[in-house]
Each structure stands twice: as structure tokens, then as C-alpha cells.
Length: 352
Image 1 (cartoon, rainbow, N blue to C red):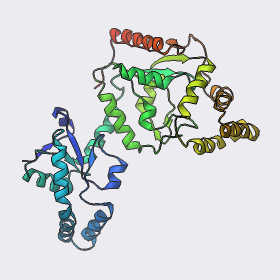
Image 2 (image 1 turned 90 degrees about the vertical axis):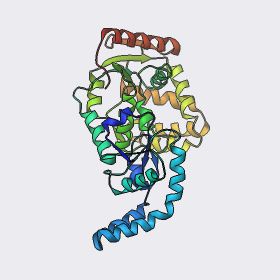
Image 3 (image 1 turned 180 degrees about the vertical axis):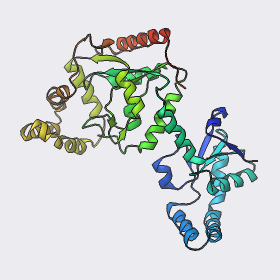
Image 4 (image 1 turned 45 degrees about the vertical axis):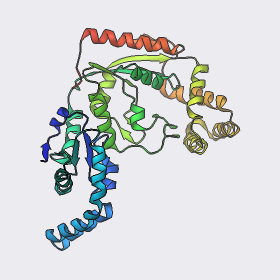
């Protein structure tokens, strides 16, 4: 028997497997994080069915839909039997309509325990919107600030490995948040996908009272931080990390040269700096890039572009809740952990 389940009721399922039966383009635009796409209709087929519905009749559209879907059902059944080994299947389409009802009904008849999401993806999306509309958000934010190359992202990732409540915003946005931010990373997620992935990652940190993020502008590449989170970042606890120019250059050289074939992307990004640095300086940077002279390339960018742009101190400063040197990453990690422990002991908001 098909069981309808609401978005709010999903939490009672253990390891649910979300099955998105919408078309490929709908799935690519946004879906429930972790969902598997088993489209009942392709984009072209969906358009055909819609045309038949409008221009002929609802019955003609149903007949056409059945003829298009029937040959796919054996393969879909096999895929669903494999998926149900991981957990209960939750089928959904756009609004919990005919597509999810049809697929879920067939899978139920074939003995697969089946749930259907009431309201479909639309209901899930509304829950994400409500999450980000909370005022204030039910958790505090610790923001790691510092100049480019000080190891902020590495610190976030190290905190995650230690089980600390940290979120890598740049990873979720697939962008490092600078003029070179997209080099070697591929396409960015849609805004809806970014907001959902971010909300789910924060929900998974429950019951942490504080989360740690890296300082970002409101826009990270092609996506935008939710207003509520960005405001809380501005008002949250501010930690300054700093390091020597030599260590910063070494970090960035290792990061950006790890991407094979990144040279053309770097050159494209460099051309955006002509107005700020001047043609002569950009041409010098290009020549170093082509010659593989990455250290002077990075050092000039840090000293003449990034540091003047962001303007963070390169030494301890009283304007922050704590100042932490990244010269010893392990010690820095311990210091941030100690800071979090003190916040937790003092009480605060709880993630919900």
C-alpha cells in the first residue's frame, strides 16, 4: 500500500531514498539533496504530453503518457529494487501529482514498500524557504576571516573531519569566492539547489548551538547566500586567521596548480584585472604563468590585489573575538575548537 508522507514526516524515516520521477531538466535545476532521477518522461516527451492535454484532451494526454512510459517500466522496476536495499523509497514529482502517483502505484503492486511525498518537490522547496525565513536563525555563527591564502578553507575542512559543526560554503557553491574562484571547479549549482544543500547540511549538525563558516560576500560565484545567514554572519563571532606571505604563497600555488589544464581559465580571470592592475602588470603576470613561475605570480596577486581588496590584518588584532596564526595548522585547529567549546558551555541557540 502506498503511504503518503509529508515533508515534516520525512524525519521519521531511516535512510530514505528519494526518487525524483521528473524530467532531466527539472531534476538538474533543483531536487531534494541526494535524490535519484528516474524520469517517467524525458523533456521532449513531457512537452508532447502537455501539448496533447491542451490541444486535444486530458484523456488523449493520458493515453499518450501510458504509451511513452510503458516501455520504461521494467527498467525502472529493476532500478527501484536495487535502490530499496538502501532504504525506503520516497517518490516525488513537481506537486505530488500523476507522475509520482503512477510510478509509486506500479512499484507498490510489484511488492516494493513505497512512500509518496505529499505536495512533491514544491512542498519540499517551500520547507527550505521557510527554513531561511526564520528570524533569527536558531543557531549562532562563528565566522573565520582573514586574507587570501591564510588557510581558512583548510581550517573549515579540518574542523569537519574532527566532527565540529563547520560548513564549507565555497564547496557547496562550487566557487572559492574570488575572481579566480571558479578555476578548475566546473559548473555551479542552481540557487535552489545551493539553498537546499546548505539547509540540509546545517540540519545535519543538530543539536549544535553554533556553526563555523568562512567569511564570504553575499554572492559566491553564481549563487547568493540567504539573507538571514548573511546577516547572522555579519553579527556573529569573528575570528581572524593570519599567516606569513611565504606560507600563503605556498598554499595557493599548491591549490591552483593541482588542477590540470587550469591555465586558460587563469588567463581569462587575469584579463578581468586589467582595470585594477593595469595592462603592463597583467602581461607580466601572464608571462610568469606561461613560464610556470607560480610563486612570483601568486605573491604579486596577494600583495597588489587581494590584500588591498580585503584589507584584513596580517597579525593579531584586538578588533576580533580571537586572532589565530595558521603557521601551525594543528595548533590553530585546537584554538578554534577551544573557542567553540567555550561558546557551547556558555549556552546559545540550537539548530532545528
